[in-house]
Length: 198
Length: 198
DNA sequence: ATAAAACAAACGATCGTTTGGTAAACGCAC
DNA sequence: GTGCGTTTACCAAACGATCGTTTGTTTTAT
Image 1 (cartoon, rainbow over the protein chains, first blue to last red):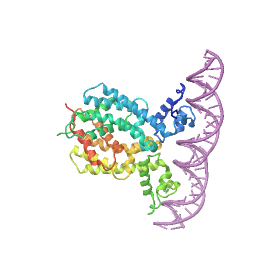
Image 2 (cartoon, rainbow over the protein chains, first blue to last red):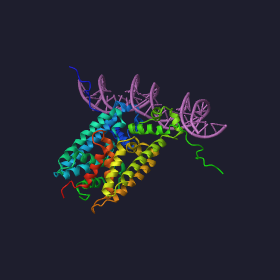
Image 3 (cartoon, rainbow over the protein chains, first blue to last red):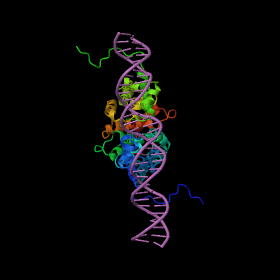
Image 4 (cartoon, each protein chain N blue to C red):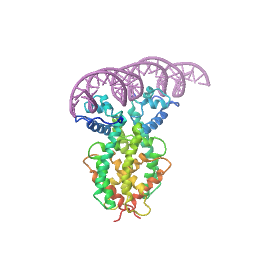
C-alpha cells in the first residue's frame, strides 16, 4: 500500500529554527509591510542564508500565510477566553473588544500583521488571507447577534463600525498614553449610551 | 540682481503629461500599494520611459507625496463644502462623514491612496504624509468640539472611533451593495441613539 | 531662439528563487 | 550505551528578473 507523499517520516529536530523564522518574519512584516520586508531581511535576522528559508516554505507568500494564520489564531484564542468569563451580552462584547484590541496592539507582532498587511499586498496569498480573517469575524457576528437592541438598529453595520474603529486604532496608537483596555471600553460605551438629543 | 534658482522661466507646455502621470500613479498606488507599484508600471501606463518621470519628480517618494497631497486636498474640499450647507452640529458632523466616505470610496483614486498607503510604507515620505493627514483631521476635531454632549463623553475618543470606522470601510466595501452615504449616516446614527439599557 | 519635456540606454543594487552539496541530530538495532 | 544509516536542516553560490535612478541627447511647443 502506498504512503501518502505528505507523510512525515520523522519528527522535527529539536534545533530547527522554524519558530524563530516565523517570529522575525512577523516582526518585519509588521514594521515594513509585506513587500517592504525582503526574504533577505528575514533570513539575516535569524542568521541564515536567504535560500535556506525555502526548506520551510515553498515561497514568500506561504511564509506570510503562516504568520498571518498564527496571528488570527492568537487573536481568536484571546477573544474566546475573554468572552467565556462573562454572561451578559454587552459585557461579552466589551470583553471581546478589549481582548481584540490588546491582541492587536500589545504583545507580539503576529496580531499586528493581521491588520497591517492587506490581502491586496500579496496577490498570491490574498484569497487565503481573506478566508482566515473572515473566519475570525464570525465570532463578532455571534456576539452582536446576542445583543438586545432597539428595533431599528442594523447589527451588521454595528459590527463593521466597531471592528473598523478597533482595527484602525493601530494607525494612531502609540504605547504609553491611552491603554488598549480603556480605548476598547470607551468605544463600546460610546455606542451604548445616548449621545445626541432625541 | 539674482533670480532665485527655483524660478520658472516659462509656463508649462500645453501637452505636458504631468496630470496623467499623477492619475496613473494614483490608480496604481491604490491598486497595488506604494511598494507594489513600480516606477516602470506607472511610466508604462502613461506611455513614457521610466526615466522620463524624473523630469517631474526627483524620486518616487516625491511622486507619492504629490498624489497623497492631492488626495487630502480633494477630501478636504468635499468635506468643507458639505459642512457649509448645515448649521446643526450633529447634521454638520453627519454631512462631513458622508462627504469623507464618498471621497474615500466613490470617485477617483486619489482619496483612496490617502487611506490605502500608510506612512510606514514609504519611510522617506512618512513625515510628510503624517503631516498632510494630520492637517486634515483638524477639521473633524472642530466638528466634534461643537457637539452638545453629555458630561462624561470623551470627544477625542469619539473622533478617533468615528474616523477609524469610516477609514476602515475601505477594507470591506464593494461598490453596488450599500452606498457610502447610507453607511456614513448609520455610523453617526449608531452613536447618537441609545443602544444599551441604562 | 530658447527652454520644456521627453527619449534612449544604461548603472549598480536588490529582488524571489533554485540547485547541488554537507554536517549533525535522530531512530533503531545490538 | 554504542554504532550506523537515514533524514532533517541548513550552507554556498548562483540564476534571471526587476528595482529606482542617472546621464547624455533629441524633439517640440512657445
